[in-house]
Length: 444
Image (tube, rainbow, N blue to C red; front, side, top):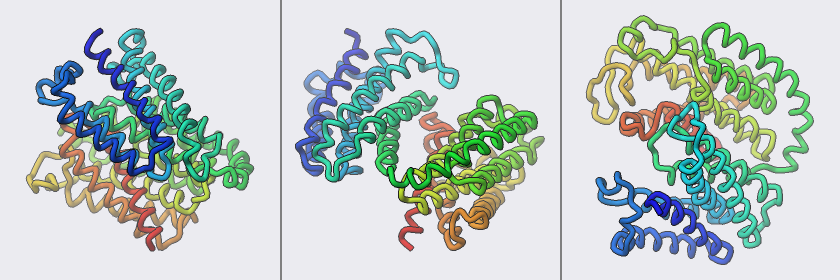
């Protein structure tokens, strides 16, 4: 047996301990995860654990994945102390999904994924199948200990959707360890699924159904216009259509207009100062034409928020998250493009050292100011369209500023090493903005 095969089998088998979540309290489970972390760090290397290490681990002096595995489990338990079924399902998706993806990819992988040639379709299918099955089983197994009991639909469907989302995240061309990305995405998807309410859907389902036909028509015209104008690539056209339909169906014409305004601001500023950007080698690839990755990174979270507005009892919070995500994504793009086009002094916020325009994480006064103005303008437009109250625009602006700061910090430290790419950073930007904005509005 190869070391990698042995590593993945151990990775999978450790999820058997998730069965204990049915009988343990959250603090008992957390103590067990902390004990597993201590064992992996101090004991396992001395009793043969080094045989599971990869070559990079030998250079580093320790196995990062073996350390992060119990850290991820501990984080899931602490994040969902009252919903250990979510923690267990995400654990199963991480263990079985990630392990099956590697084993299936190595044994059967023939078809490379277009967005990441290092990953295969067979590996992705193995992840979704094995991870989804494990997630459903563990969710069902732990459900009797949860009060109130989770809905049967959640137990069956949410882990499958979470496995699909985590499987796609695992294929992203980034170097962030799968023991971070997979449980984070799976846990987030399961949490969103736990918010879905049958009563909310009954109240909004007929309105959503009535908006589907105009949503498809409007977005078909918009997607075709974007393709003809050269602002999007083929993948971006399809992704934009899906996102646009979700937004229109969830929040109606007002939500779609804000989405369109965000896209227009990004596309327009990408063309500003294009000659200078091209000369400096910092222009957007393919003349600024946006692809699927950019669409999902900047507006995917907004689409989820639009759907949450009609499927959960938290419509007001979902609307704030929607506006904040778009304001942050649009503002960040404007800041980046204006800074690259007309920024006089570009520097890294942490070190205050001057760098050339386009350096990951770099900011300029001109770009930062333009980004804040754009975020405020988009927030104000969201209020004018009736999506959120006027007083929330300041919370949205604060969220956008927080998202931009987080993105700059991570870009300066992790993008150069390919630990994260620009699309992942953009998604984290919108997620931070939405979280901060909702937190502020609930506080006030």
